[in-house]
Length: 217
Image 1 (tube, rainbow, N blue to C red):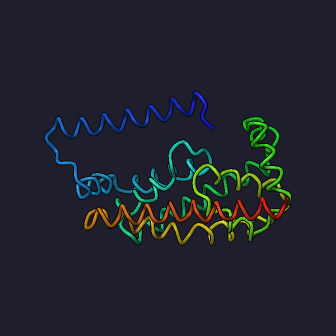
Image 2 (tube, rainbow, N blue to C red; image 1 turned 60 degrees about the vertical axis):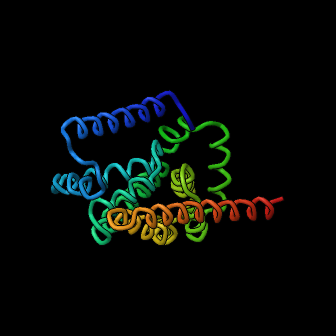
């Protein structure tokens, strides 16, 4: 959902990015994937912390696409550490959404959702199990927090939820992180891989949604 706050945050992110690019150009720095990776790794221990916190946050409130940060993890830290950090962020973001709904569903979550999203949440919670979570994780974008909230609303055990969530996300997560790592050596191939992964996730999500709708008619 687009709200004034989200629009303002999105504009702020864009302005900060543009300001950073302008500063790099003004100082004569060359803007290449290798230089970006170098700048991020120079942050030391703060780099992974910021990545994990930022990615976990957008998995709860999807202000920007999570896939952009997942690709960034591979670009900044390589395939192994990038995948580790992105996986930790995914587990953290999924857990935050789950426990927000489980502990404060009426005080925090429900009040901030539109009536339409509340209805979707109620329907999801009625048939929520670890297999449902795993399949719904194939749907990219804003669907991620709704699945987390629905699992928190349901009587699903936290361990089963987390296992289903991570199992559904992990294959695409691996490909996106590896695509980020490939940006420095083969940017065209990396771009194609991201398009295939995100497009494939969207197509699979559409098929699941269509079959689920038909099954309940």
